[in-house]
Amino acid sequence: QEKINSTSPSYTTGTYNNETVRIAALSRVIPVKSKPVSVVVLVAQTRTGQDAVTDRVANTAAALGIGFFIIAGILSWIAIQSAVSPLHKVADALGRRGAHDLRPLTHPVPQELEPLVGSLNSFIARLRGALNRTETFITEAAHHVRTPLATVRAQAEIALRQTETDASRKTLRSVIRAVDESSRSATQLLDHAMVTYRSDQMTMNEFDYSALVCEMIRSAAITADLKDLTIEQEITGDIMVWGDRILVENALRNLLDNAIKYSPPETTIAINLSSQHHQNKPIAQLSICDQGRGLGGMEQSSLTQRFGRGSNVKDIIGSGLGLTIVDEVTKAHDGHFEISARTGGGTCALIQLPQH
Ligand SMILES: Nc1ncnc2c1ncn2[C@@H]1O[C@H](COP(=O)(O)OP(=O)(O)O)[C@@H](O)[C@H]1O
Ligand SMILES: [Mg+2]
Image (tube, rainbow, N blue to C red):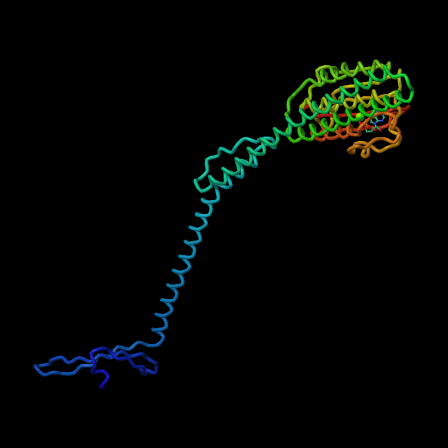
């Protein structure tokens, strides 16, 4: 009773109808017929009712929490997507480029990505510069190496004609041979460097393969004539090839060079060019068959290796890079190259290049 007299309500736990209830009590004095009467107001709630309220509050809080979590998740996903999508576009643009496309990236990007694209572009520019310098270096090196060697050779030839003693003649002949060897090696090394460089940066064109083969045969005819070799050619006209003309020319030069070099005098070299179908695709097939010394039983894989030479060719100058060049060029064109012993003696080189 004492407690209830205060102005703020007081709380107790009691029992009502055999159920535990929580009671709030408040007393007030109100006038009844001009007399003050003290009134106590009791409000009770069963414990189950209270639990229900607590549950409701907890459930609402949980639902709100999960709701906010989902909304936050969706918003952060959207934020990440919008931040990452320009990066994806840049990656796509780079991925779609051909292997030789070294243009700067001009894709519009958000301001935050500009430094990245800027450094990427300056990297591309440096790479382009380095590649251009490589090409210039290869052509200049070829020139700088061959010119002095040619001079040395000419001087040695003059000396050989003027000298009387056999000993000096012998020495001078070996000097000339050494010069020829180094000149050849230098040329082949640089050709090989050029082929490796160009295989990465092929300039693909459709060109007249028949015309190229005829042209190569014409220029090889001079050396073939020196050995009285007969070149029998069977060439179908107008065979086009899709490829890098300079690379193909290099490969052909090496094959013709070998056929002439390894043929004994007064023999025949048969050259055949035709268009064939292989797995429903047109291919240009060129075969160069000689009546020379053959491959001495050596495998193609060891002959196409860098500096790989046969065991039966020690007497003939060579660098062992010719077939390496041929092999690399055909591979770069998705073509096929085969060198094998010819029935009846000699060697057959077969090179197939796709026409489209
Ligand atoms: N037409 C051929 N006749 C005989 N042997 C050949 C022929 N073509 C290539 N070879 C063999 O393959 C080797 C590798 O050829 P290549 O790479 O052109 O080097 P090389 O500078 O020796 O000619 C040669 O050393 C030779 O043994
Ligand atoms: Mg060779």
